[in-house]
Amino acid sequence: MSTASADMTARVPEHQHPNQFALLGQRRFAPFFWTQFCGAANDNLFKFAFTVMVTYQLQISWLPPTMAGLLIGALFILPFLLFSATSGQLTDKFDKTTMIRLVKNLEIAIMAIAAYGFSNENVAVLLLCTFLMGLHSTLFGPVKFAYLPQVLGERELTGGNGMVEMGTFVAILLGNVVGGLIVAIPEVGRQDVAISCVLLALVGRTVAQFIPSAPATDPGLKVNFNPISETLRNLRLAHGNLVVFRSLLGISWMWFFGAVFLSQFPSFAKEVLHGDEQVASLLLVVFSVGIGIGSLLCEVLSRRHVEIGLVPLGAIGMSVFAIDLYFSSRGLPPSPALTLGQFLTQPAHWRVMADLALLSLFAGLYSVPMYALIQLRSQPTHRARIIAANNILNALFMIASSIIAGVLLKLGMTIPQIFLLVGLANAVVAFYIFMLVPEYLLRFISWIASRLVYRFQVTGDENIPVKGAAVLVCNHVSFIDAVLLMAASPRPICFVMDHRIFKVPVLGWLFKLAKAIPIASRKEDPAAYDAAFEAAARVLREGDLLAIFPEGGITRDGTLQEFKGGIMKILERQPVPVIPMALTNLWGSFFSRIERGEAMVKPFRRGLFNRVGLNVGAAVAPAQVQPEVLRNHVARLLAP
Image (cartoon, rainbow, N blue to C red; front, side):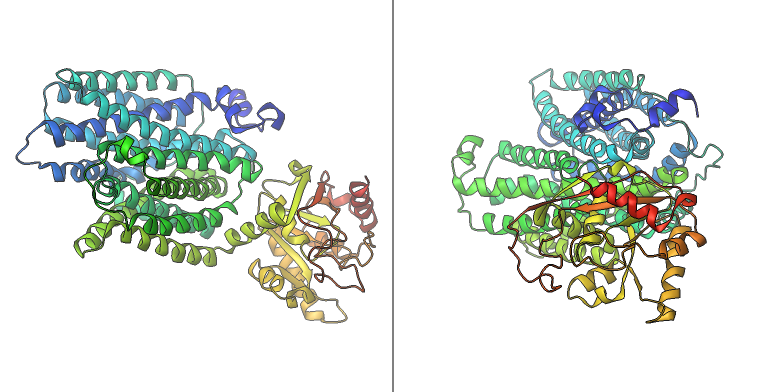
């Protein structure tokens, strides 16, 4: 890798970019952000202007207005099914910046052809351009999501994805609004659309010239141009990591969910809300703004880590507000078509807009961490091919949503009833996914505990390695220590825990779900003792994080106890770095022992939202580890 590339991918100290907006001032992100923004805006300006033109302005015998939107949408999504597998391979094989510039060159050529189509009212040419713009988006999709993890650190990935998602939806919104306004200008509207599309493509290509190099991750890859066999191969690659594969399904379900709402906005505005075209546009604006706000909130709520605990929170909100949208819209009285001003004067309509805004906000909270997780957990050599597999699944799920919604309407269901059904289905699907991948549910519980039960402050979390095996050692203060360590770590942790804690109601179920390793003393159960150390060695061999509480039990007086020698037995099998940690101010809280050795007996003995902390020290080399040495490290971290 060149020096420039190494500098680009190196982790930048947090103070240099205190939040996600600071990325817009950095060359590794800003040109890429504006390139994808221009591309998304141009896609939607072109499609919406074309749809309005054939729906309202032209009389095409072979393309009735009722079919125009469906045909344009189908032609745009078809390349995702045909060429995603190939685009993923090309992105892994070649420099991503080179790929971006080639795609933007293609966009200029397509928009030049589209300019001819608009100027001459040639619908066949514009349909061809619709397919080609779908191809343009198909080629750009894997590049977009494979580029980010190559140039952003783990602490920047959620914010970077949030910015891209926000920018994409704002671009979609602006493209639709501007396209509709320009094409409606009498006499010169179509020519102005043609000029706007070409200019926007040129701006995108100009900005792309400033994107720094992002070298190929698998330059020796032999490209397979058979879309069927390569699609199956990509799905097998994704399935190699079950967390990643099931996250792909979770994202595809989100697109299914969102497509139902987006496709029904015009009919919902006209038939249910009794509004005109401006009301339909307002629904799109509210939905897009909600997605954007939710995407930006992810970095704030995740403390700049990839926090998949937000995914269950997003799923809950999506279901709650989709269901409430049914109740808020089902009983609206019929009326003549309302203008935007008339629509906004009725209080009942504000509840509908609030439901849409919150529904889409929670969809942003749901999707951004999933995208970041896929980027972080996928192997760099075939990351783009996994993103391509995601695009294929997304396209299939969106097509399925259109077919299912159409069938339900044919069967006599109303649009609010479809929203209710989708909201209920979302709850079922989300529960199923979270049971298949308990990590989502565990991270959600730890997120709740660290933000609502306690005010949790982590110091030194940059010492927790973002990849590679390590042993985390921490003082043992309460029954919830493991949950708080989960909240502090950007990666899953496997815990070695006293077998007796598995008998505690709720917490025992939680730790079994987390696949914690139960351990008993050699005297009490020799087989369980040996099995625990073998399981711990296996975790480290696989390159994961292992956490132990070397005191051997929860403190009964709040003081740091003697460390046992089990850590040495672990390091004998797998010598890895050891990270000392210290939980502070947790003694005396509800989950700690305090009175006669009892815990969880007085819920409010320290009030609500107690401030607790975790101090993380620098790694200790395995050769330097001794129980007393580690105890001294933890004691120093506990010192005020």
